[in-house]
Each structure stands twice: as C-alpha cells, then as structure tokens.
Image (cartoon, rainbow, N blue to C red; front, side, top):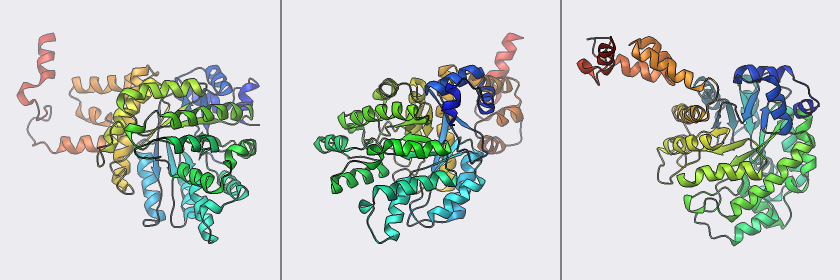
Length: 425
C-alpha cells in the first residue's frame, strides 16, 4: 500500500507525524493533503532518509542538479558536489549523469546522500542503447520500462518522466514558430523518438504500467515539461500549455493509482509571466505541487544565471511554486564545479526563504528576526551563525582591521545601531 492509499484510508503514519512536526502543521492536515494530492511526500521505501514534503503551506524546498557528462565523468567529483549541495541546504539532489559509469555514480550517491535523490531515466536509456550499438531512437518500450524499474529498484526517490510529450503535443510543437526550440534534454529525446518512429510515447500510451512500477516502490513521478521553452520569447506558448493540459490529465490518473505525483515547470519566463505560469499550473493540474526550473527571467545572464533564477524563483515561490530547481553560474556554459554548486544552492535558498516569508510559512520570518536581534545587540558571532552562508559572512568580517570589533567598516563611527540605541535610551 502506498502512502497516498494510507492517507485515503484515514491513517496518520509516523512519516506524516514527522512532516507535521518539521513543518509546524497539524498531522491531520498533512494526511488530508497527501490524500488529495496537494502534498507530495517523496521517499523510496528502500531508503531511510527523511521524507521530502512538497506542497501548500510547506517550506519551499530546493533541488541541486549534479551529474557527469561524456567529457567529465568522475565518481569522486559528483560525490563532492552532492556533499557540498547538502551542506549548504539542498533538500534534494538530482543525478543527471549522461557519461562515464552512470550506474556506479548513482549507486554511490544513493549509498551516502542523506536527502531525496531524483533521476531522469531517459539519460540512461540513451546510454543503454549506445552500449548495444544502437541509437536511443531505436529503443523499444520494454527497454524503456526496464530502465525505469531498475532506477526504482536501486532506491531512487523521484523520477522525471516526460509523459506529456505525445504525438499531439509534438504536432503542436512542429506548428510553432519558436525562437529557441525546447530546452529539456529528456523531452527532446522523446520528441525525436516520436518523430522518427511515428509512434505514441510509450510512457503516455502505457501510463498505467508506469504507475504500477512506481507504486511498487512508492516512488514519486515528477511529470517533466518536455517541451519547456528555452527562450523568453517562447514562454507560455501553445505547445507549453498544451503539454501542461496533458500533464493535468496524467496527475489525476496517477492519483487514482495511488502514486505520488508533482509537475515540473518552465525554465525561461519573463518576470511579468511568472505568477501567471504558477496559477495556470495549479489550476490545470488540480493543485499538484509545482517544481520549477529557476525560472530564469532573462536570457542574457550566463555566468550570473543563478541570480536571474533567484529572482524568478522568489516570485514563483510567492505565487505558489513548491520546489525550486537551482541554477548555477555555469548554466548554459559548462558542467558546474563544486563552487558553482554552492553558489547555486545558496541563491535558490535565498529565493525560497524570501518566498516562504511572503507566504507566511510558519517559522520563516523568525529566522530573520533572530538575525536582526543579533545585529541590534552587535553580537557578531550570533549574527554570523544565523547567516545563510556563515563561512562567507565570517570571511568578510575577519577581513576588517582590528580596531573596534563592535563596528563594521561601512558605518564606522556613524553606526546606525549605536545612534538608534542612543535615541531610545
């Protein structure tokens, strides 16, 4: 029995009690939200990590993407990226490896990573096809499902599945006049498979079979936006919305099968369209949790895409997004380094926290209040410990000359805090 089925039977499980305690909510609210699908609890039954809770009234969570490529494929590097992501507050990690020994990388991550792990099975499908001397476009449906089941068996907690890329939506995409096509690697693989084979997407055509596999391990389906626009000009167009309509139908079917499900959202969105995109998804997908990639609110920020994504992520979170996929400074340029991973996680955490405060999430603003009290007390040790990146804050603080330890070099003798206290005393 899946956790969704437990919730529908009225059972408040130990896992639900744990989530309620961490999120400062009532256990019955958690049970009810799991039952109706507005809260997704993510954890493979084979793993002992804490559950990832996504949904309304939950703290907004942050995911960090890592993974190898054909040009950079070292297990130790990916493990270090995972550790850094978790150390700096990532709530989940996705292994997007496409090169090297991807099975070994995934197993190593699963053995050590203390948070939820997601994957995109299409990447391994391409790897499996290449090992057999074939193109990924020659894969059979059974081969696709074999890879999906192997990820579930190995302990992966959630899978990005591009089920909304169908004959119909690909047809709509062909009719469009997009500037930059589609951004999703997995989605474009499926799109080309459909185009070359003139067949329906097996993950859509055999969706019940897919759900049966996921339910067996209580693995969550992250319904991927395979036709995700890759440029601001293409945002919120007909192919994107038509795919979202398909995903909304699949959300209902997954829930009927007792499968945990959430929906992925667009990556390139003008700032004035971000809130509308969140509202459209929540309406079409029956309030399913929304996982957004950034979103990037400008296309001209490579090298600083983590900033563009943090701006978009804060607005998206305030408007209803539940899960932010980080973007690093290396986005669009190369695989992220360990330092890029850190910068990406922290930028997304800032966005998520800002949105939590705006949404009135229980306990969110208390963090800010504690830091402000430490600042007013000129208690620098406590102030630094409460910063989102204490190491960086300490480094700046320790760069000051050893004069008056109570002051900062910005205000010096004109310290606003001291003068405020003087007026109030």
